[in-house]
Length: 225
Image 1 (spheres, rainbow, N blue to C red):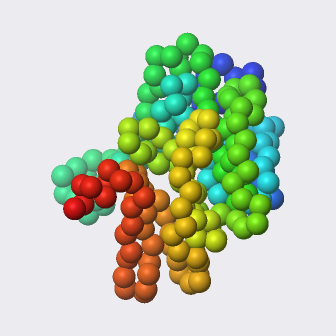
Image 2: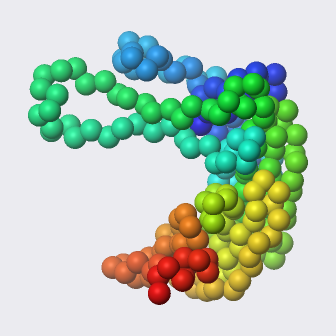
């Protein structure tokens, strides 16, 4: 993702965030070739930044918000059909789509780094790496899934706990918004396949051939009726 790898960084750069089962997030700096160059002629250089962020429990997810609290979308590569005849014999180049930072970020304003583990969630201010908010989600159980999603024109952290509770937390303040008992996990298929999507929805495999869709948003429920 495009973020601040070190405390003294003045601009965002390409980084690789690695979460571990011991609750550590290690940030690696990536030196990518220019977008017009091929990877074969200029390799990607990876170096440790020295930044390590810690939480309780195994890390599940992390995301970045800009200074206005808007989710920062990660770069992606445009898919092209390798068998398409549109390009003929032209040399194919990989095209990486980057999301330009807002004008406020150009002036050196910070980002919010949202990190969630099996036990707690933390929000750090970047590049200072100051921990702004901490929320201990559960002490008696553990999270199976956590995702940063959009809901009602805002961003929140959605969590699914092993005791069957679905919880949402506001971002970046980590205030509890929802805590409801949905379904205790008795089937490992649910634990492995459960995922949250935008606008208050979630999916999981209820059987090898069936997908269960649910919503925890009243607005989405009204639209489905």
